[in-house]
Image (cartoon, rainbow, N blue to C red; front, side, top):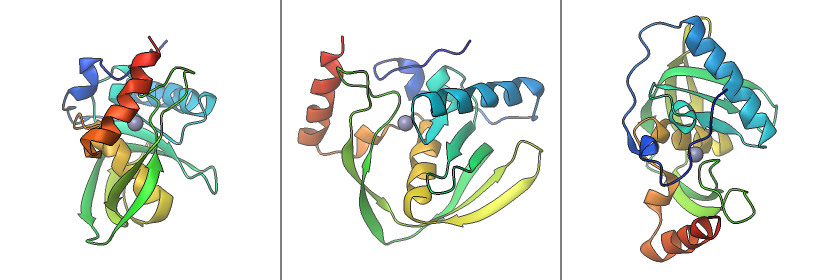
Length: 166
Ligand SMILES: [Zn+2]
């Protein structure tokens, strides 16, 4: 049984190692991550959030409910155009045990490549919410959280709610 890692846990700040082989272990962890993501009404979950320091993640297109399992995902390019969207994270929870949301500025569009659960190499251009999710989740693989992009004032507003949880 995997356990969710929450903000403050140093495991979320580690840089993850590449997956050498799409093993049964990786596949079963990803299946469990999809369950957790759906259970908690999330749209993405990265391996370090369940304490696994490997480069893989799961995410879901909120418009189609299509699930993506990405192994060794890499953002090849980012648009210079940016946009602002509300972001939350299943590792950044407030007093009610629900994600704390805040507005984050990021590139609007990205090009991503990854290996899927069948070992197939894929590439896609993503925009809108999907571009947002894939950037947030790949950041996790490098120990970066969305709160890192906030101004000190907004970051403190989020952290105050996080601290109230305890
Ligand atoms: Zn997150």
